[in-house]
Length: 511
Image 1 (spheres, rainbow, N blue to C red):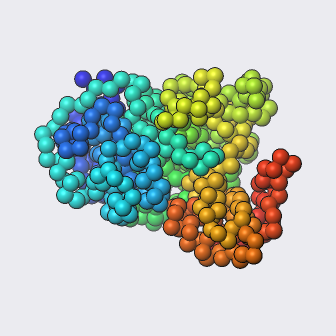
Image 2 (image 1 turned 45 degrees about the vertical axis):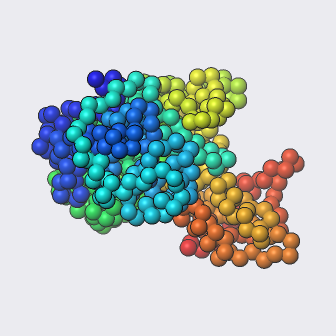
Image 3 (image 1 turned 135 degrees about the horizontal axis):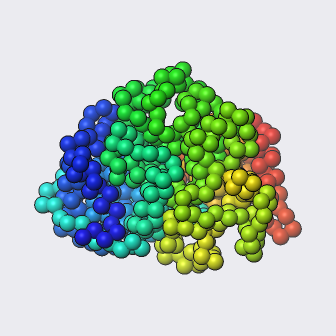
């Protein structure tokens, strides 16, 4: 009946834990497992009957974390569709571009972001909690639509060095393999566990919910809707063994929090990722919270699953003072072959630096509607990550640089070109280059170097307004440096390394 449909992940808990809480807001139950499974089947019927969603049709989710988010995600799969989750932090114009590029027939949203989106898209926008959302739940439940393992399930939009969104096509098989890998080599999950979504369901927190959902572990939404350290410690005190995803910035805040000692024995796993973790971050976290940190390395193209430094390994490395182990991102995940290769894709020996390439069941089918980018990224049948790293004698991978210019600030990827394209539209700007500079709190801060147009004066406030009107707030530069010219190599390429050195050597006021 299901074929390889991910909707089947709910079958087990819907039967053997039907009356137990599946979705909670704080400690208040919103859906039991039985109610969740029925709502998914009803909502799938509504998608089919009211919006014509069938096998292979895309449905976007541009929404903050909400009690209906997981329900809607599974209803898309139940109806045979493809989910296109979009970060609610994006500007409505950015989200509208993804809705269009993802070929979505409609978009689920939340009231805080829906109004701006409606003005930008032509497809229906269904707002959680409003009339059309309620109407989707009215039909009788339908049986799930059978899907093949290789059929698309989730289009994960991630930007390349050009800044243009690329939709990584993740199949049902890819996400089943991701789920199995977590259960095999990350942590045991039981119905006594819970997952607290302090991070966005549109990205890693939502992807990593799958191994917890299939094991009947409750999904908990903080009443605040996001990360609040005191609120999180209050939730940890409710009794369940809790897991949650955080970027390094938030892990540092938890480690330094005066209530950190209260968490002993209440945390299952802290899934840390989305940006590099420093050895000091891991030492502080283990000492404050215990050996509960799991450092995963993955990409949207191989969702959350390339290598990992496990909880026990990190705890042992902290105890032994093994800095090399703490700097690594661990060993290859179950079922994956991870190698380091040279420019000709020849595998390099231990200790030598090259590009990280991945082969295995989590690797995407390709990019949506981008055959050339697909061919380049998946050449030779392997995922070419664009990251540079080296293996040590214990099979641990250490990342040494990013071949792409991505800036990671607060756990969010920002691609310089998309910021540069916005600033370049200002008539007072002749040239612009955007770089990231290391910051102990945010990982990196975004810094812009601007060359004024002839006889023009650059207005930093105007540039800030332009960015806020066009791109997500977290993508705007924290400072603007007006320079006479940009440093370039003989071929004319901007030397961003020099700009990073300049940025690091100056004081930047945080806005």
